[in-house]
Length: 238
Image 1 (cartoon, rainbow, N blue to C red):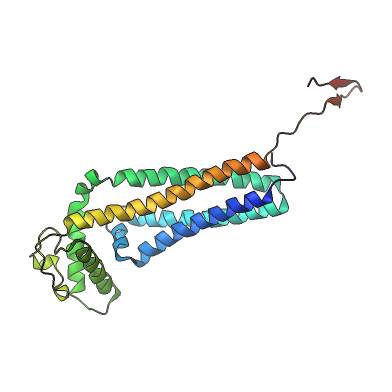
Image 2 (cartoon, rainbow, N blue to C red):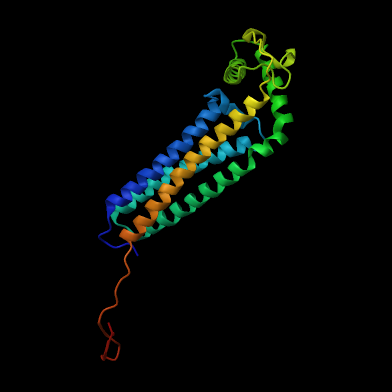
């Protein structure tokens, strides 16, 4: 059980890490929702991508709330609150480690070919959108995304560099290289970056949680002599 003289500073550090982890995940979700940087639009292209973003937001909010629970528990030295904080922290650390591992494994380079038809369809849709009202947000985002991929790979189109349906006229692309390989590389890079950062945060939090439990939890020693109901005492061997 957490001792009365628990090291509150260590708990505060753990709470700070929980909050930072939540804010980091919230930042990733916000970037994907606003599609800034442009490559984060990829989350809107895959099946389950939007559900992943919603899950990220929910986890981020829970982590920030959990950090407040931990601060309250440390400040008030409330045993029940601290135990709740430790338990929930362990649960959310496990969730993040498992979830990032699943996402990382699902989008392995050798498995991305299965998503190529979807990516191609989305690419053509963006080109079509860009040819509509140039002042619309969707049009600007489509141009920004295609322009980003083309500049990264010095390429044109998705799998046909000369196809009009795969090129935005205003970008005046003249390369003969297609952007398929660059697109897949940038997609994988975006996923790796997010998963690795979330995984590192969760690992550091796990280590901190173990330290918190080690420093703030004490096993209460049984007394050397205890009085029983009939008035006769019992001696505990040491």
